[in-house]
Length: 166
Image (cartoon, rainbow, N blue to C red; front, side, top):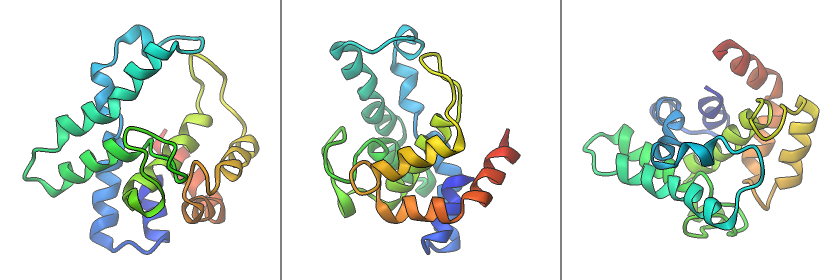
């Protein structure tokens, strides 16, 4: 729902916003192939574990990509690109800026926003203020500046959408 809100705020047409709303939650489907002990690890990942975790983007793409469904093809692109970084230092392909599909850039911000506000086995949830600060710090490096700005500008609505889901 947050990804769809951001897509609409950024001017995507209604059909694309609808597809984004349904496709974005599939972004981590590739984690099905990630060993549970890595997913649940409470401390830092070793370089080998990190490499295994990063494979989830490619695995998710492989699971979803060969479909005739426009929805599943979009979900495949999102799965592949949601860990690319705006400055080109992300994975799996080191794409930057506009090379990253807008849906991947949107899902990256929505995913990190949700993750930071959620308890994890390796850290407690952050406050809204701390989360917004992380997004601001990553604006233009980790994240598309326009997507971060759209989230911050619509923060009250984003928080309502997130609360309504839970």
